[in-house]
Image: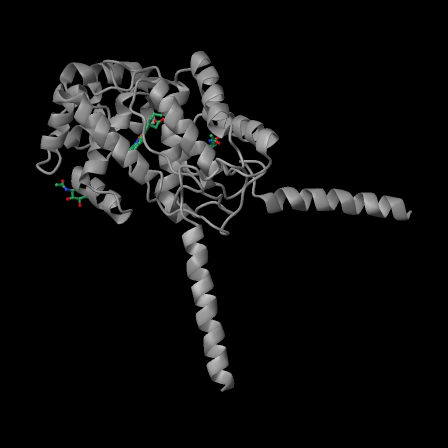
Length: 341
Ligand code: HEM
Ligand SMILES: *[C@@H]1O[C@H](CO)[C@@H](O)[C@H](O)[C@H]1NC(C)=O
Ligand SMILES: CC(=O)N[C@H]1CO[C@H](CO)[C@@H](O)[C@@H]1O
């Protein structure tokens, strides 16, 4: 009897958990009642920063990729300090202008609505708006993400693909994270704006490395000459798209056809039987590219989310609340001691 009662309680608990997790779904109107001005605030700040620095658009979209791919879109990449993802090699070139913008928006949103919107939601919204500013498509965004309590591990950050990967490695790397070939070919098109640093593509002009996939000779020479002046190493930048470096368009796929893709991971897409047709189609039909890109961005921004009561709404995108509270508690304790004396 007692054990049957216990079983009933257990079933009830399971049912409650199920209801709870369905409450944890994303919705486009998640913040509509609690923060009606959210989207205006984000749009305003993104537009203002974009006017000063168009590089904020590629910077934001890369931050979103580096947030979502390792352990999900939980703003873990924004955490600073010891053991943070920002200390890992792939994140060395994430741009402060975009990290600062996300925190500036968080502060403005929390001033208007209280601490109701996560850094993860703000990162996705800011990325969506900056992509439109740069001429790209608007992708659908549902809201209700929560922020991670801790950064992803070194191994998880190590899942991010490297620029020297070939197409089969890229396909399996994306596949392992639930992203398919259409996601790979379209999302790689984000390299139609923004910049890279010489260490990321030196294998394209140093013949000691594998020379496949082939690169345009003049392009390789120009990269070699440019990077000869990269002193101290990693300070020079090279546009990812040589045709329209700041615009979000389909010219990246023209680069690939002209064998002027900057990374091996880019150039290979126009050669490999699995990706060639789609990359060619995107060069011929910008509408088709934009449509797939928007679909894949929505998919990427929904990877492995924390919802419902998991995670937290951070009061500072660079630190988990506990760390902030520890500092505050320490301060009050000191005051307490002082008052006792
Ligand atoms: C397919 C595998 C990918 C590889 C191997 C790769 C690799 C890289 C590398 C090495 C850089 C340059 C880093 C530097 O030297 O500063 C870079 C930049 C960039 N990546 Fe990717 N990436 C990939 C996928 C993506 C995806 C899925 C997105 C977004 C949807 C993306 C968006 C960007 C952007 C916008 C930049 C320029 C950032 C800036 O200007 O600050 N990449 N990527
Ligand atoms: C792709 O790269 C992987 C890992 O470096 C390697 O094992 C594989 O042989 C390469 N595939 C091709 C087709 O070059
Ligand atoms: C944006 C950012 O914080 N980048 C850091 C990435 O990691 C390196 C160290 O590996 C730092 O020097 C960068 O500041």
